[in-house]
Structures are given as C-alpha cells and as structure tokens.
Picture 1 (cartoon, one colour):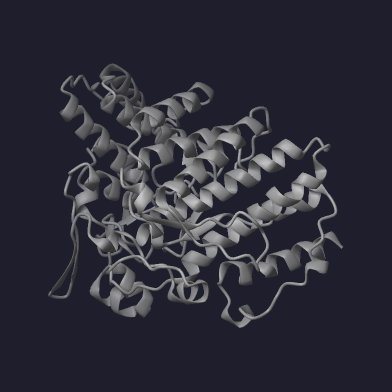
Picture 2: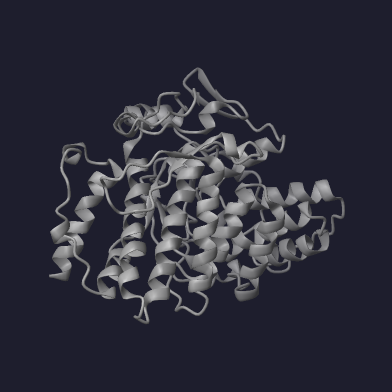
Length: 439
C-alpha cells in the first residue's frame, strides 16, 4: 500500500509543477495520497536522484559546440545556446517545482508525527530540499541579488502541497529570505543527524548557506557559514592519488562530497571545452589531465565530474573544495588575506604534482582576489556555478561578456543584459497570470 501511495503522490507532481499539459485540468485523488508513517515521508525524499536541468550549465562560457553539433540539436537547445530572448523551457521549471512539491509534502505531513524520533531529521531534510530548489530557481529565473531586491521579481514561493492553492510571484528579497529562513531552521534540526550524500545533512546546509550568501555578495555571511562548514569538514582529495586516465575520474563517495546532486541532459561527449578555460591550467596542475582528455580529433573533452559516472550528467552537489574557495574569496573581500592564502595554498597543494607547487605569497588584495576567482573557475568547472558567478561578478563591475561563433555568425551576451535571467515558461505564466521577466 505504501508503494502505491508514494506513486500517486509522485504523479501529482505533474499538475503541481505544470510539467505535463495533459494533466493540467485534472486534480490528484487526495484519498490515494495518504501518508501512513514517517517511512512514507522518507520514501518520498529517497525515491529520486536529485538532478536539475542543463539550463544551469548550457548558457555558460565553459564550452562550445561545433556547427554540425549545433545544427543537430533541438530548436530549444539552439535557443539556449545563443541566449535567444524567447527561450521557453518547461522541463527546467517543472523539475524545480517537482522537488518543491516533494519537500512541501514532507514539511506539511511530518507535523502529524511530532512525537516520532524521525521528526527533526525529516523536517530538516524537507526544508533543505525546498531551499535548494528555490536556490536553483533564483539563479535561473530571477535577476542577480542586489540592493534593489525588494523591488525585483522573485519566485512563486509554493510552501503548501495543495495544487489548488495559487501563489503570486514574491519579491527577490522575499525569495532569498525564505531560502535562508528554511536553511537556518534546517541547520538546527540536522545538527546531530546521520550523514547521507543524497539527503540534506548539517554540512550541506552550511555549504548551501555559504553558496547563497556568496550569490548575494554578502561576503561577511558567506565567510561565516563557510567557516562553520570547514570546522566540520576540511578534508580534500589529493589528486596525486587519482588515476588520471580514469573516466569517470571520481567515485560518488569521496572525502570531499557532502551533498550529491546532478545537472541532467548536458552530455559531456557532445561539447568541446573552451580554450579560454583549458588554457588557465598549468602543465603541473593535475586538474588538466584529470578533468579533461583529448577527443578523437584533438579537441578537449571533459571527464572530471564528481558524479561517479561518465556521459550524460554532470555534478552539481556541494564539496569541501567549493566551500574552501567561498571561504578564500570572502576572506579577501573582508580584508583577511592571510586566511585566504592558507585556503588557496591548501587547495593547490592537493591539485599539483608533488614537488611542483610553489606557495602563493601575493599580498596585494586585488591581485589575490584575481587569483582566487581564477582558481574558483578552474576548480568548479562544469559544476553549474559559472552562470551564477558571472551574474554576480558583473554586478561587481567585472564586465564579463559571453560570445558564440556559429559558422560566420557571432552571438553575444553583454554584461547585465536582461537575458542573464531566463524567461519563466509561457505555459506557467498564462495559467497563473504571473508577470513575466523583462525582455
């Protein structure tokens, strides 16, 4: 019976996330979605491999497509690749809100089991999952966070599982406030919880808070939460111990990964690594051979995902190396250069061939920041973070523009262009009477 109930709950996601147009006029049968135990709730959270749409990576400057590959892709993929103004991707939106739906079922239904020992653990997981999904949505469908956040459009903050309840779009500030509030509550609930890579856990909550505050350019809090994370976990992989010819190079379970999730539908075999990224790596930098390999025609291909598999998905989870880089950048911006030097030297000593790395000693703040940002780009390539980073850095005045060359035609995405925020799918806009993002 429990299996049937869970299946019916998952079918209801189609309506909730506006992902299946055939179901738009149907209502889920609430009598078949009864939760009988905390095991049912854990099943809702465990009955999936968290993966988000390739939109997180597809707009970035980390790769390019050949003309023949570009021509072979769908019209939607081609529109995304060239940042077309009218890109309409229902799958990316639906995936986000399918996870919000699961989270809201758990958050709502667990209140019936307050006396159960699993209450804190399940509530904490639900709040983390919802915050993570809202974070993805904020990086795709909202403008970058700024001092004008109270006047910018945010996400529709669905906080109830009832598909019949309509939610308006919040402000950008309200969206971030909700994520942070959920995570701070989750952090307390998961303080002494068991660790599992595919579930919200205490370290992953701290890591996501650090990631969110970084995206807000709130470097004081990014430093605070990355520091708390690093007090719990500071272990890095020594890349000298990795077989550089392996593909995939990394196992799912490794000392650095504290939360496991994926970017789906972005096949590494079909894209070529951009030389502007590849040329950043020193020949003694093991990431150059562990992350990349030469394709059949000499082109550079990517294989360095922490997803433990090769091919169609890339890693989007949380690792200690990412948090170490958040800590380093935030420390520099807060005037703590010595802290940043310790972070960067610790990271790079585990990335270079033994005996070849020379410690960074740069004491000029702006030059050290440039080094930290370069190392962030090199370490976190194809993690789905570059899009968010460029949006943030352009608000800092870095004026990074992206370009694509297809045949003889050049497509450009200038700094702070409105297309740095994707459109919400028109189907969702029309059905809910929401205001669309500007174009």
